[in-house]
Image 1: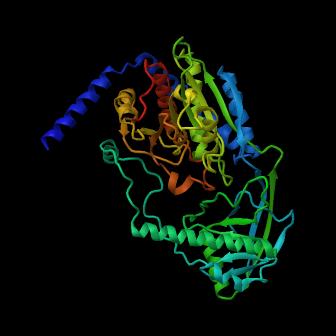
Image 2: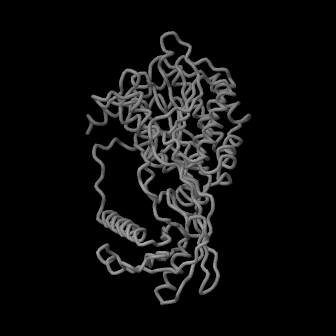
Image 3: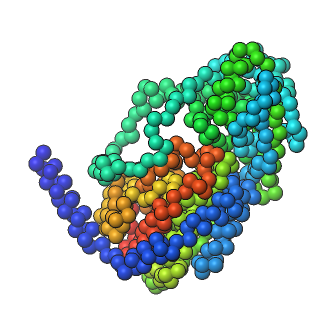
Length: 512
């Protein structure tokens, strides 16, 4: 025990000395704070990405409007080589051009509804159709419904219970929660899921399989469409995303409309009671097949050091969104922050030793395609699956993709050697609530593409605000849910971190 305590003390002393040794240009950090907090343009950038560009589904006109806006602003600010770079074939684009759904009988009732992406419409016609209830829990029983689905709107019976919300939608990390994150020890093994979790996942898989098989049969028989719900989609908030394949060679998917949980369960009760329900539906969608490529937005500030200028510090966020809103917190917030960080650095006319590169990724929502293909195309040795010579020159990658909440710290992704460095870099921002450095990993976004080949990639810790409860992948993810002061704080900290990484003598250490 004494020996262990001695090791811990020595490690702590070592980290403390390293933090003291880390050099920071405090005068430049002061200028970055002044520009980022007092002369911010981040909300104007966010307005153009959201309200002006519209939903930014991969391959849609809205995505291209936002991408070209970003390219234009980067050029205007003086960034070098602003461009849209193709990363490979993605598939069909898609756009919702009209949507109307209502119950006509037993009485008129408009429904809160959004078609899922990459689904067909009603061929430009207002359709009147009966609800057809399927009250089964396994796929084998679907045989009983063959020959009965033509011109119907399919409803899979559910009896979920809507529970009231006793907690606030918006939250921030407490000091106790942040301290616990900071004190976490590295974990060698991932915890095994418990019995309840495994049961929940099995139920979800059965439900997904039943829905998929029902769609296949409904489309084959000529049904008009299918209604869907999520128990989370209550109080007028719909969690709605993909409805089928987007590959160029795949046929159109059956119309699949997500409706509010309260509306869905009401229809289930009526249909279960044997009451005939007639619906009106008019949905127009458009597929785009002329250009199947995916594009990332890239630009840079060239390095000036004769020795280090070919090394690169990267920062990024995904620009694409889902279709039921304008993707404000997921992830116009991150994209606006990264653009604002570039604007701050160019406004200060920084002369970084290393090159600073911004990347706004596409198709993150479908599986990190933009970032993964960038890493694959540029930074990966195909034989070893690790970073190649170009990848070895990437000093670090910093990402934002957890909503509008301000930065409270950073995830080390297991890279303990970066702890004293980041601890020092956060010191000028303690008054803004940012100082936590945790050994934890976090996933689900574009830094993983870099971490996967051994490049130091990091995601910042952000306050949750309403991310999981109200905005993430919902029809509520609009500009009005962005927190201006938080985005100013994030932009300032990202600009400072990127500048520090570009100026230090050595690249950030790689995880051993």
